[in-house]
Amino acid sequence: MELRCGGVGSQAGGRRMDGDSRDGGGGCKDAGSEDYENLPTSASLSTHMTAGAMAGILEHSVMYPVDSVKTRMQSLNPDPKAHYTSVYEALKKIIRTEGFWRPLRGLNVMMMGAGPAHAMYFACYENMKRTLNAVFHHQGNSHLANGIAGSMATLLHDAVMNPAEVVKQRLQMYNSPHRSALSCIRTVWGTEGVGAFYRSYTTQLTMNIPFQSIHFITYEFLQEQINPYRDYNPQSHIISGGLAGALAAAATTPLDVCKTLLNTQENMALNLANISGRLSGMANAFRTVYQLNGLPGYFKGVQARVIYQMPSTAISWSVYEFFKYFLTKHKLENRTLY
Image (cartoon, rainbow, N blue to C red; front, side, top):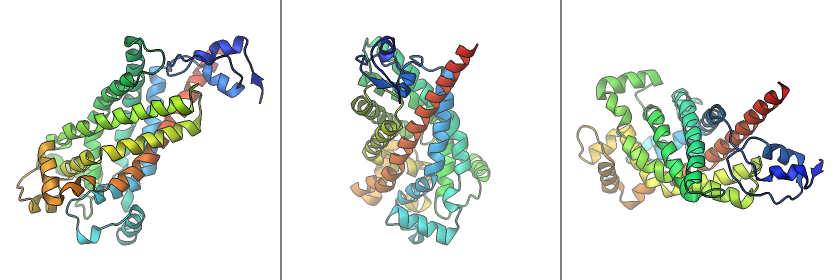
């Protein structure tokens, strides 16, 4: 591949699609990297939203069977027929006893939620990150800006995803009375009211704000270490995304267990804890988990959560960065043609 060193080509060394202003130092880089550098310093809002939607849909679709297992492994008082020792063993048992398609039940509602949720999520993150870096007068990436931007993006993301999460998790549970997403929505709406779709919203935010802060800060930090020029580098996006997701998932597992309990309103667990009616509020969920399972209860399903989240975030970032690069380059080429 042709190498271009110094000269006019190196003047674009500091230009990045994410607004990073690091100086490339005028070193030798291949033509493919330089093509990425010469793209506009920030992609358009529509590009961020399209790339984000594609990333969300693919991430949740590919990893959905593992997500189904995670939901069941977080059950506080599972049916004896739904006891699992590992993700692989759980998938085998579910397919053997409940049918090949059982781990995918609820995938349709998740895809419908993931598209718009991730579109707003990435668009908000990119724009907030760029704005906050300018406010902080930071040359490059401020970790504080990344954390705040991730938290703000989470507010939008969870507002869309929370109802989908409620329906999805109720469909995923063992011996679920719901046979389709539509029947689940009708039943929950009719028996518990519209508020049931947002019963775990505060818990979701309490979990996802620290999760996304850790996630984005770790991702941007790792990118600085292994991809300092911020080129389009699929390997670096996969590694950074996977490690960031694994760390954030492990750290926030206790909150995820509480969220699952609030979403599913697990009858056997609530009866065992002598709770009549509906469980609401993160504090009550924390007390119930401790009452039923002690401290280990907060880490139920941690293995499945990390196994799910690590490839999920790797897929999400690699797909997002690919579409951001592809769409921005395509728009630039169209502009030069006319």
